[in-house]
Image (cartoon, rainbow, N blue to C red; front, side, top):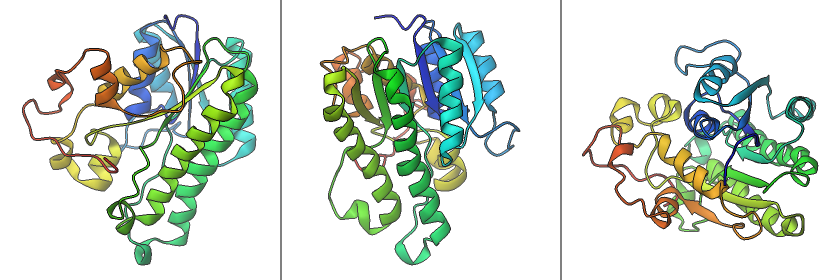
Length: 272
């Protein structure tokens, strides 16, 4: 199944995983809507919606850069409307935007708790809700959310309960949407990495270059997303996928090319 002329709405696609997915689908001829906040480059993060759009066009796709903070309903509605006006609809939604703070309860400030919930939970919900009318008319419509399998081992709650709550909420919404929109032939799945991924969050917040060197490139998630989104939306829905498992099902088991440092010991991601 080709992505040629399919319209993909991606939140937080300025850099990292979101951009990698954008470029993978653009190479197959997709229309990519980059809905994110960055219009001026932050030296620590890199990239803007405009630089990402230029990369999408260079990769072979068509791009629409829309400044959008998913915490604000009116911005979400405007971004979705612009996407539908430019490309005639929306076929795929990638819920990638997310905030992280791996802090224990006493060190989690109220503003940080609220930020994670407003982006990860409320924002993901609002974007999905707003895209649904267009996805109902889409071609093999999919919702793909970057969130983990739900693992109730206490160790995933003990050190960062606020963050864990938000990511599990994203996965629970995925399960709910799969059932709610099955009659509309809209698939809803989640995707999560087996290992840490070399992103700005890993380099700036979690473990610096040392952890980045024990990680994989965002390309592994882009490839996994590509294979998920090619599946029939009527048959492939309600899954909380791990990237390695998706690739293995496609017969891809040699994952060395995805390592930031070939041969390095890899660090397992959260929740797996």
